[in-house]
Length: 363
Image (cartoon, rainbow, N blue to C red; front, side, top):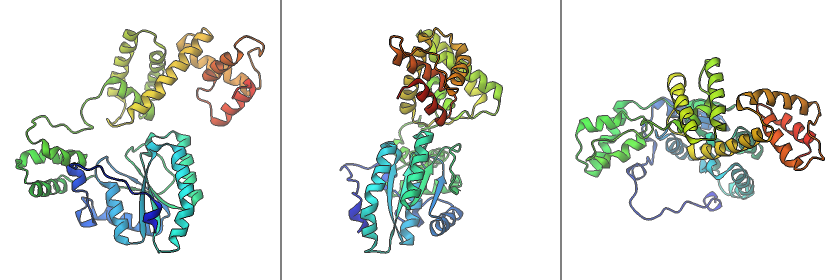
């Protein structure tokens, strides 16, 4: 049986959050538009793989799962991209042999739910999609970032109406015997994240309940998200943002970095569209590594930060023409070559990066 192929998650004993306790068990309990239910059912019947876009916390994953279970022809297994690209691909390829044996004993098909794909790099996303198609499995990709691009057909869930959320919250209040004024419930119904609104019902004594992803965030987090999405249509603003970000990366003194971050924060508020929920920890780690590499590369060649792009273009053209500007006999050649490659690869494609490494004779 498929249930024996995939190990089930063991829940830790204890009190559940309200959102987990009242997780929909069938389509009737789902707070979702009838049109979206029809679309999901149609895609499950006619598409091998597709994507679902929805606002965070609206219950898209559990609703699609309820529809799949109601159809009776699928066994659903969720995979989070937080496990890493290699682990997901390895898991899928290893399990598929056992799945094929299990499928001979019953009529159900395995349906993979791929979540948190926005946190992956572009090449990792492509690898996961390619692995799904190569393994010939059925899959649904869920994402919350409207800028995420996929070649699969996409269902965009309609935003939940205030009335639907209000009815759902009142039902939970009645079940839990929560004495909360209707005005307070209406405030929670205004939250775009229904899951956060449900969990906030127990905070009835608090007078300062805020929507999780709507409170103000620090300038560094804004910077990370703006750098990730570049959601601005003005090329001059993007160019200015890129230049200031470069200066921020190279700045050696904290007061200077704080000053640049304040400028970038104002620039983002006035010109960029951004949300408040992102994988800031992962992006912070990536940017910290990038800052260190750029700083060391600039110091190695005594390059002034604003002139980095000029030198990057120069070095890239030389290396792509198979001209190595460094003497291989110099001391610490490998260190210098890696620093040169760090500058040259800015804006380069993957094939170009491979050619430049071949010219520099580095791994």
